[in-house]
Image 1 (tube, helix red, strand yellow):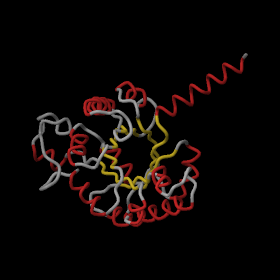
Image 2 (cartoon, helix red, strand yellow):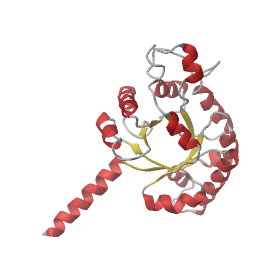
Image 3 (cartoon, helix red, strand yellow):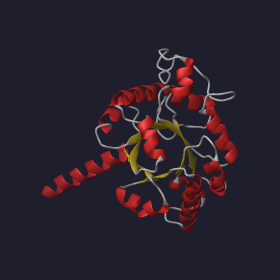
Image 4 (cartoon, one colour):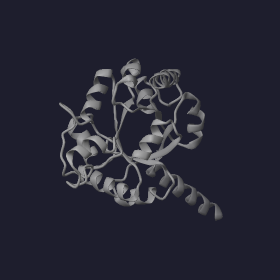
Amino acid sequence: MDDFRTRMLAGEMLAGTFVKTPAIEMVEVLALSGLDFACLDAEHAPFDRGRIDACLALGLALGFPLLVRVAEATPPALMQALDAGAAGVVVPHVDSAAAAARIAKACRYGHGGRGFAGSTRSAGYGTRGMGDVLSDGPKPLVIAQIEDPEGVDACEGIAATPGVDGIFLGPADLSVSHGKMDQTSPELMAAIDRVGAACAASGKPYMTFTPDVEKAAAWRAHGFSVFFVASEHAWMLQGARAVAKGIKALG
């Protein structure tokens, strides 16, 4: 986890994907792929706490960093993902610096922040002392997702918020919020550039979703260094469709 955090914060080019299937086998297969990380999508896929816990346990065992995109920015949701051993959390719909500060506080130990329990996976199930966990434990990543016009307007403050480690720009929701039917509008491109400038000014890594490597290459110039590319659902469909088309062409 510490190596993954160091690489992300250093601006290294990293490739990951969203996981939509709440199954440990999916994590096990993706860990063989060469991807730098994956993100369990608890916002848009049927992950419950038990499935998140099991997937995170396997990710840690395999040395495969897993983020969790939480369904909501509540302290319990954030704490549960971090206690279970997530490499970090992706928090949707962050629309102000005040919201970013609340999220950062909820993810860190301290007065009014993340509750402490030495019995959790992240604390070694009681095998590590409190001082060791608080001072030397791995620092999970806190990634604020900007996907609303209000978030773009507040992006400079969000990016500068202490405890926020990176910014994820959500191109789909931003496009929908502007009444667009695709992800090519001038409004989206202006938002991408403004948020990218805010990340650069605050020294925070900039990340986004792309459907494929070609889109990532086209958007690289906007300052992105971390790409969440498609999902295992998309890749299964692409592979299956190609095979189906190829076999039918043999006839």
